[in-house]
Image 1: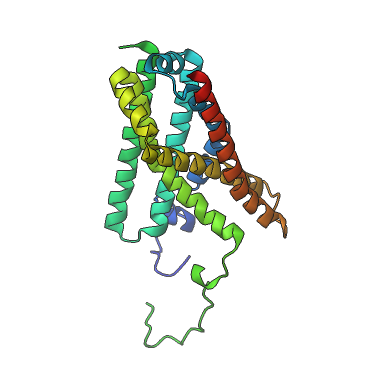
Image 2: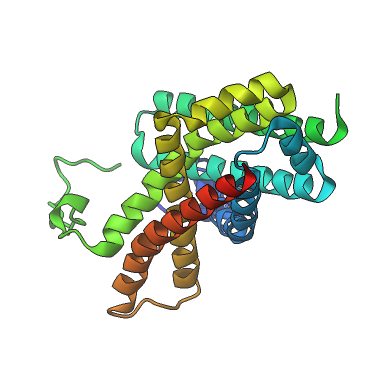
Length: 133
Length: 139
C-alpha cells in the first residue's frame, strides 16, 4: 500500500482513486463518443439530404417534410445523438484546457445547460411539427 | 513523512516536451482542425435549433431565417457550417479507422489526414453545387 494511506483502509488503491479524474467519471464517455460517432456518420448523411431537399421550399412544404413520421424520427435521432456527442466533446475540451477548478465547474455546468436547452428546443420543435399544436 | 530538505535528491526525470517543440505535421494539423470544427458545430446547433423552431412557429418566423440565410453573411455561415460538418465527419471516420488499428503505418497516416482535408473541401463544393441546382429546379 502506498505511503500516506491509513493502515485500517480496506478499500483497494484503485477503489480510492476512482472518480478522481478531472471529469470525476470513468472511460465510458470515451466509448459513448465512438458509439455516437458511428451513428452520426449515417445520420449526418441523412440530415444533409433532408436539408438539401428543403432548400428554397416554403414553410408549409418544410412542415410537411419535417413533420412526416420517418423524417421526424431520423431528425430526432440526429439531434439526440449529436447533442449527446457534443456534450461529451465539449466537456473533454474544457477539462483539457481549463485548469481553474471554479471556472471549470462553471463552464461544465454551462456546457450541460447549453446542450439541454438546444436539445429540448430541437426535440420540441420536431414533435410540434409532427403532432401540430 | 516526506521531507524535501532531508530526502536524497531525486534524479531529474525526463519530461514530455510540449506541443510547440514539434514540427507541425499533417496529422497534428488535422487533429487540431477536428477540435476546432467540433467547437464550430457545437455553436452551429444554434442555427439548427433556430431553423427547427422557426419551421414550427409559422410562415413569418420561417421567412425571417430564410432571408437571413439568403444574405451574404448567412451564406458564408452556412458554407462554413457545411465544411465543418463534412470535415468533422471525415475526421471522425479517420479516427474510427485508426481505433480499429488500420492506416497507422508510415505514409498511410498522412494520406488519411490529407484525404480528410481534400475530401472535405471537394464534398463541400459538390454539396453546394447540388444545393444551388436543387434551388434552381424548385423555382
